[in-house]
Length: 191
Image (cartoon, rainbow, N blue to C red; front, side, top):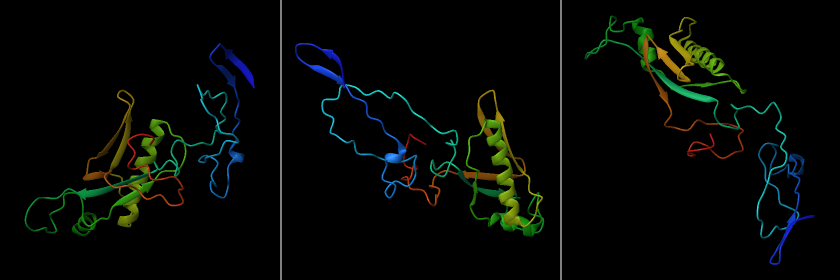
């Protein structure tokens, strides 16, 4: 303990607490990036705290199952002529069978690979996975209607589909298996 400041009314002592992920109870906290520890003594009348050093491994991913930010759900709604009856000529871009299958499509959910992305890499990943997920449902390899691009001027990712309507579904939480952290869906911060 080093004395930092003294005056006639009080004395302030500097104390150092070193915490390592190895200090955690691994039965309660199996992951080294999410844990609590109990200090060896009770600290009273604390005036301030300062983080002196932190070591974060380079494999800490911005997008991960633990961060609950690797899934995206969406629907595809094929363009069709409005009317009371759907006929073989109803759909503009599909055969009747394919159009009807898309109308009855389930919620598509994609999962990006865990990692850290540049905006351009994220746009490419989303573009590839969204088209691939619809192809898998359709049982063909010719669905490439989603065009996801990054606009460097306004720093936004743009979702386009020139053939179909679509909805990005953000109102319901995604399900993350094998994730020990509480659901982030209700949080307005720390996503």
